[in-house]
Image (cartoon, rainbow, N blue to C red):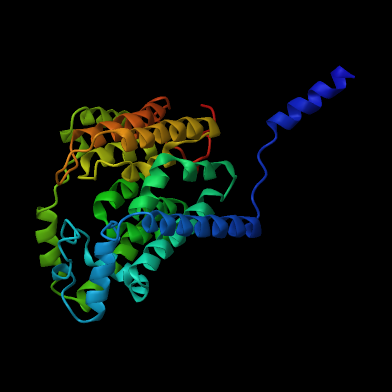
Length: 333
């Protein structure tokens, strides 16, 4: 009896995970999008009326643009502590949400982003959805960030033009997954921006010069991330190295696209657990007032997200992956 059972068990363990069907994918993605929107609503309802998200400035700029005003002169400070540091394509993409009140626009934007990300994550198997349970995903929801949408764009090619709305976050993903249609879509967005508001570039460049963020390589320990160039033939190697060169915010939401470096369920589980511990550490750690948030948030994101992703990348051979994308195991050499 045992001799007959063992081959069956071995075959079952070697069987590939079932491929999700389109209807089940759509249902799960929609449910997760609704859950994300509800989370954002509850999070901001529990905070003071003066609480702001990173989406608020874009929403305000979009409403100003609809009124024929300069979107770069429309950001109230306070409560918003910085200028509009996004190019006008971000404002154009946010225009549909500007017809909603701010509390609902935040939730709708994140609900849409998570729905698209969940759809992309399940294109072959279910287990990549684990990425949505990690600390970077929760941080992105609480801050109302673009990174879930940018991550989804790697998995849903037509969305890649959206990387143009935040070039500092989009460029590392383009370096990892270059595509001529991405360039074409971005050019269309920029052309529309000049048609709608021809002088936007002056306002954006002025705001960008005042931005407080610096590249990771200029922060303590950040130069280690350049070791990813050893794996330059792999998209994940190029992504990590390019992220180290961009002036990104020293927070975990910027690390969400790092889930794309994994190629196995075990790798994703380890990175998700490690980043979630970092998220909890961020909540307990003392925070320094200042435009760039101090040293502690950076060390948390470095140790909790960047360095674990770097280790995952360096464990791989430096060879072209062929047609194998994120969450797909490379064939043996």
